[in-house]
Image (cartoon, rainbow, N blue to C red; front, side):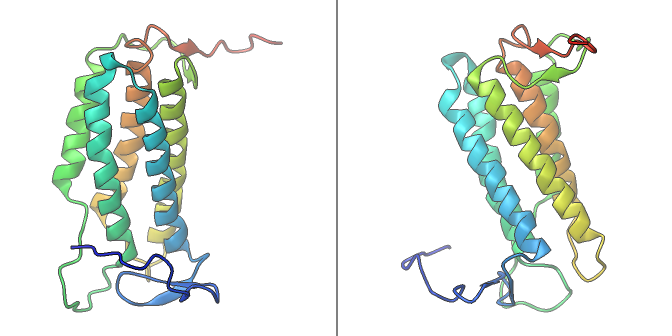
Length: 193
């Protein structure tokens, strides 16, 4: 159980922060950047949820579960699996969480017409914020894959799959929140030449 009694500790005043394992790293460490960007995407999803209409209850429920999963993802990233024994079982993203995202993508996408062009971010406010959350999650994915490329900085396969599927879900949810795709703003190649 997480218990936060004191919000400031002053332990980061010199430019370092603690990982879940107790290890101290600089605040610009690649791992900190990765799970900080996951947190940023989660905040953007919070903005989305403020703009969803009554017709988007299913999307809101999905996003509520995802926000919780994103804290699981942050926990997974903040305790690198370096094979050392810990006095507790670290929280890890599971394959089941990835599968659930895939099922939710399929459920939303089944209600949309196939695309005939790329979609520009916009339409409804909820859709615009979903596209913002999508781009932030793609940045988190780039940071996570960069981290994973370092053999000394393990990132679980399930965590990498989850962040990849998340941006796909946010794209489909953006279309869904645009009147089931009817309000999509489509790219017109070369329209302003």
